Image (cartoon, rainbow, N blue to C red):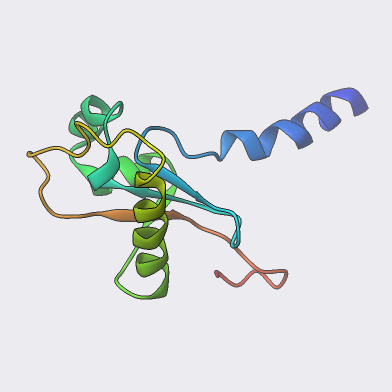
Length: 112
């Protein structure tokens, strides 16, 4: 029983990882972002879910409103573009940028 708990405890954070080419990782804030302008491998899944916002929700990510998190995601995507192949990213079916983020909570249970 204890072994099962220990394995589950260490495996849970892995299950909350962002999936696909649209993801960027913020080392400073320890948070994933997903940007529709970076999607590539997940385009079919995005279409099956009904678009970028629904795709994000299916992954447990929250749609990011313009503001600090939105700007941070754009900055990270810009930095990532210097190191990654940017060819064929995004989809003409979804021209508007959608950014989503991993929901995080502080020690008091407040969303941050």
